[in-house]
Image (tube, rainbow, N blue to C red):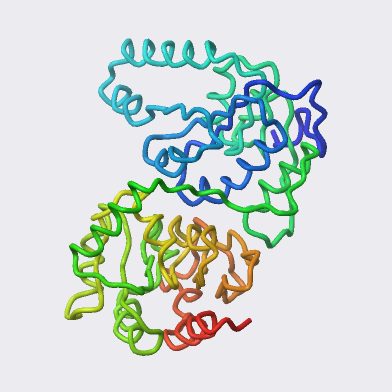
Amino acid sequence: MSACTIACVAEVQLPAPPRRVLIIRPSAIGDVIMASGIIPVLRAAWPRAHLAWLAEPMVAGLLSDNPRIDQIILWPKTEWRALWRARRFGELSRAIVTFRQTLRQASFDLVIDIQGLLKSGLLAWLTGAPIRLGLGSREGSQRFMSQVIRPPGGDRRIGSEYRHLLTALGLDQVGYAMDLVVSPATRKKARSTLRRMGGGRPYSVLAPFTTRPQKHWFEDRWHSLAVRMPEQVGGDVVILGGPGDTEEAGRIVRGLGPGVTNLAGACSLAESIALIQDAQLLVGVDTGLTHAGVAARIPTVALFGSTRPYLDTGYDGGRVLYNALACSPCRRKPTCGGLFTCMREHRVETVLQMARTLMAGGA
C-alpha cells in the first residue's frame, strides 16, 4: 500500500488550536537536528499548548535544554529489544502496556509522526490521540494515522520535509531555523574538556564519522586535511565523534602533533553541539554533527555522496560539495563495489579551497 492511499492530504484543517501536542521523531541525530526547526514555529503558533517530543535516550540531549519544549518522553527501545532477544515476552508486554498508559494519561489531542515508519506509527497509535498526522508515512504506518501529509519533491533546502509539514498545517515557515539549545553548564564543561585535552581556540571541527561506509570520506584524506588546515585556514583542529569512533579517529590523528585534538568519544552529544557552536569552521560528511554546523550557521563544508539530504543550507556560509554521478544518490544500495567513487571525487585541495572561501566571507 502506498503512503498516500489513506487520507493523504496536502493541507490539514484542525478543528481547533491543539492543547497538547506530541512530536514523534525518536531518532536519528541528524534527522532530529533538521526537524528541530519545527519547534519555534509550533510554539509561536500555539503559545499555550503543551509541546512534547518522543525520543530515544541517545538523542534526548539535543532537546533537553530547549525552553520551548515542555516535555521529553523517552522511548526505551533498547530495553524492549533486549527483552525480545531474551525471549522475555511477558516482561516486554508489561513494559509496552505501561508505556501505553503513560502516553494515554498525557491526553494528547494532536500527535505528529514526522518519522513516518512503522515503529513511529505504532507509537502514535499507542497515544490514543484523536488526531494523528503522519509525514510521508510508509511501511504500513499510514494505517495508524488520521491523515498522511504528502512528502515534498524536488526541494533542495535543508529540512524541506519539515518545512512542508508546517505549510500543510497553515503555519509560516519562511524563517525556518533549526533550534538547538545548549545550557551554560554544558558549554562550560565542553570548553573545559577541550582545554584539558590540549585544544585551543580558535579551532575548526572535523566530523568524519557516520553510520554507513558509503557516506564516509577516506581516512588518509582526513589526515591530510588535518595536517594542512592549521596553516591554510588558521587555528587548531578538533575531531568530534561518538564512543564508537575512537579507533578510527585515532588512526586519523596518528603522527599529528599539537594543534590537532581528538575528542571523539570524550564529549556527550550536547557537549559536541556546544563545541560546534563555538567553532570557526566545520567540515564533515552526512552526519548529525555536520547538520549541527549548519544549524549553528557557522562556516560549514558538507561532503555528500551516496546520500543528499539537502543541497541548499539556507545561508551563504554553508556549502554542500556533491558530485552527482549516474548512480547518485544510491543511499543504502551502492553499486560501485566498495569504491565509493562519489566520495573519492572530493579532493583535499577542493575542500581546503572552499573552507578558505567561507572563512573569508566569500560566496
